[in-house]
Image (tube, rainbow, N blue to C red; front, top):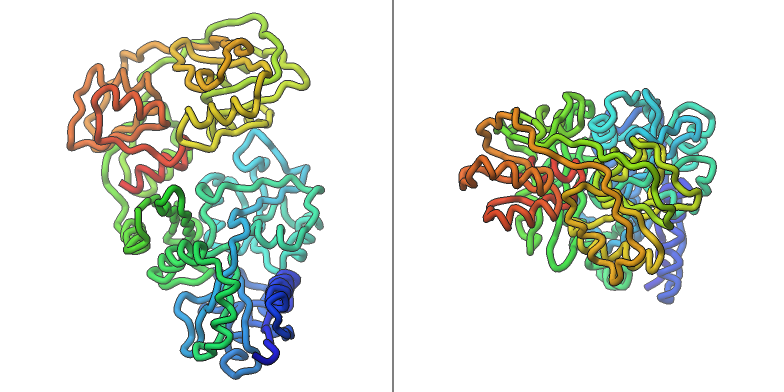
Length: 519
């Protein structure tokens, strides 16, 4: 076809997207021109997204130019597009997905590694997204939120100028612009824990519906797998009839032939979000199931957790805010096992928060070059609260898989394992040789005989030893739902003959909340 005219906003990121598209089309042998168009979202900079009326803040004027044939192709951040296309327009193709994660950029004087997200107490955090606000506050109620507008470099400059302790941005924009962030502390937050906007990190290429020649050209740029997963995310958004001002996140991936979806929604930006995690062999009806769960009235069900939970913990507040009656009592009492010295090793590996606590409570002398490994996110947070950073963090629900990955990384180097006296040693067993592995018993557990377990509809068992103690005094019944925290706890339930249990997507507290709220 003759020259293709691309319409784009004028920000650095939008122009990167337009130039990226131009380069790909030129490689296919087409002549391309870029035309810059100002949108309402670019012109109104004094309001947060949640305070702006209507939809299509960053797309309307570009779409009008497309309909008027002033341009042939519109390049959008797909998350900015309305889910119902204007009459006469269609999204002809979508790009591969850049990281959909969120980045928290923190001024170095505002860092506190001991606290969640590595933010100091009572920080001022910049964002104008209702979705980001509600998820940030669910983890850190002490955050003071301050609206933040402007393109990516402008926002970063506002942080640099001291107007905020931290700001939150989509990783995709920062990566595409190749911005140097070395002057800040950067926290990249797992998409499954901090749920992104639908289609975040994806470009949407929009054309006129009857432009069949260009539609055929654009098939060469389309990523069909990304198209399939973000269709689920955007369908969730569509069913909520919302835009970027809605406190809604949705994230879908395809893994081992199954579709996994995480979603979060709130009544308002300052309310605790309702979270859902579902998996399915097909995308058919998946978005509808997610939305049905999110729109249901908060559950009034009762839940017993085999761990002490202070009133201020995220886990307890997230459930109670969404209607659960929570009873939390530790079935075990942990007691420290004293040690005088530790052997100096290349690595130290922690398989639980308790291992971290009872190891560091004895003030061990760690070698300057010793590296640290942890079983997962919750253990890593406990390590961070002690002022240490992990060099290896397990990311699977399968302890054996974590052990195999860690063993491959370590090779023949020496590893110290602080453990419980009743440890299953699952990670250690994945090493071909045990010669360079040292077990250090740091604590042991005894039954807390004073606990009176109430009759609840849901029972959360947080360790294999808790599972043993619970079923020593109770019989498994089909009218209860059991939730196992961690793969080893699930294995123990199977050994005890319990089949009606749920295993969260990983061993983090957020995954546990997802599992319970998705029942």
